Length: 504
Image 1 (cartoon, rainbow, N blue to C red):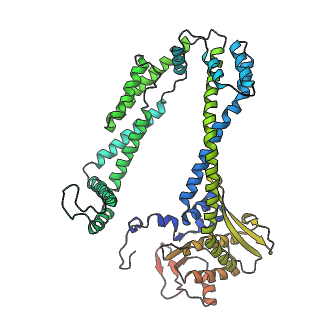
Image 2 (image 1 turned 135 degrees about the vertical axis):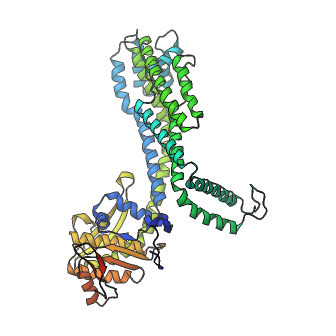
Image 3 (image 1 turned 90 degrees about the vertical axis):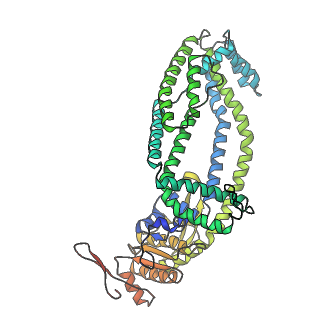
């Protein structure tokens, strides 16, 4: 509600990411989840608050790359023993030769490649094609159906949006955004590139264009969502329409059907594209089944299993060559990850320091006579193992102990407030208020008095609005003579709500 009494939806206030990062509303459930919820929730909250989301995401992605490279590097070693076992069970001289090379101190991969390629057919090139055909994979029926349904749904949304005011607003928003981007790249150019009007572009135009964008974006939201869905559906379809494998004979039935399948990438109309994928997809799957069956029949092995062994050896060699490349890259990636992790630890400690200091001050007020000290918080781990470690000590003992093993429910509530209240005071918080929902629950009377003092201190910097059914907080505020505007809200049997006259 505005000071003049007008009411606007929350989304029109242009709070954007600040509403997530600094969140000025704190419900009772959120307080409980702060220290007892999923380990990653508080980590993500503090990371966003400290402006470290991008850094955490970069560290997670780089760690994922390193894990993938390590798996590629180690895959041949894991699969070597099973490969030696199956080769050793064969009497084929090529299998004996392969075991000898694989067991040598220095492995000759090129020699192994020659052994693996010697699988005995009169036409080696055709044999390679048949082997690939036998294990050829094409899109599953369910995947094709999902893409077709999404294309048709997106086409329907586009049709509904076409010609609407939102569609017009979407087009204008795109034009303005492109014009602003062009002006940003060429700030000294004031001549309009579309109408050649001189002096048309400038700071005043930029202000007017941004104002128009703010007004049009809500109108364009539905149409923009339709266009976004259409673009995503088209991308899914084009990803599905993979090109013809280079090794597949173009004159074969499957090669011809696949070429037709691939040609769908040029179809722009979503409905036509959906029809193409549905119709040609059935033909592609049928042709692939027939080609795989034919390849299997033609690959009946006259070498007592060597063809299968040669295929398995070829696969292992592909993994071995890939492992060499992965190993070369892994060293640099791990060095980068170690540097980034160390840098991230320093940045997290530096930015978390003021929040920890304020949290310790709040906890000192709330703990009253308890001999439990808040030792600090640490952002540790990454990915699924990320968490915030909250350390406390008992009776002045320096050994840090994780909080969940020591605290009562009321102390958990006090600890959650100690962590959350500093968020309202962090530098850069644009909100001048904080709304708390019943923070008194499960607290004893002494803690409530500490809470009253803490709220009074925070109230010097932010407007605090506290809802509670517990009168101990208002009693404590009066008893301690702390500044507060206390109001009583009544509700009758018909759920009519009114504000009592005067202070409660």
